[in-house]
Length: 211
Image (tube, rainbow, N blue to C red; front, side, top):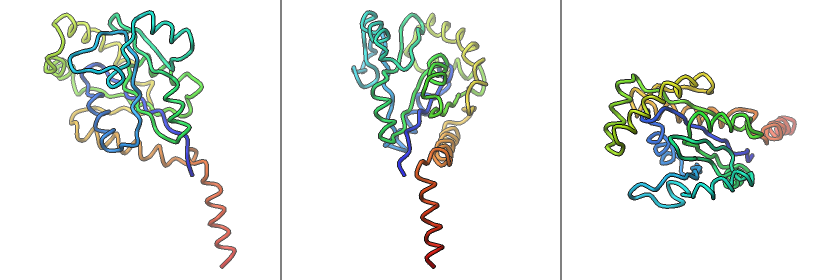
């Protein structure tokens, strides 16, 4: 009873834990396909093209958008980010779920696309704004100006929480992970996501008739 793959969208303000939760979910279920985004930002130390991101020039990125090769895209902090469409559609047709670690703008575009019925969207909230800032500073990756920019943008990002199917408050990373797993298990078990279910039940009825 192969089903179409789901598009699992994780969004949050920077520092709320969505990337950590995405990695944990992938470790829990290795069949999940992670949607590697394309971006125009420069690689950070240790990052490789095609692993963390597809690193593209602005001209290359714009050409992909013009050719309809992006499922979603947005400009964030002066750089473009987007999800290539081809790998996502291939995974869906194979019955594999694809995990997106994207912001509300990208999530909104996917939810409004032709693939909307296959989307499960989840927003991650921090327990407090003080905690959010502490996590950003704890990364040790960004300058004070970048941190200030991310904090200023967080209020707008958080305002979009009601657009999502589910909301998780990340007070404890282990508890948030368990909530995330529960959501995925439930969505996979929905009757309308199991295309062979009707025929399976007919088979059960035939067994009754043959008794």
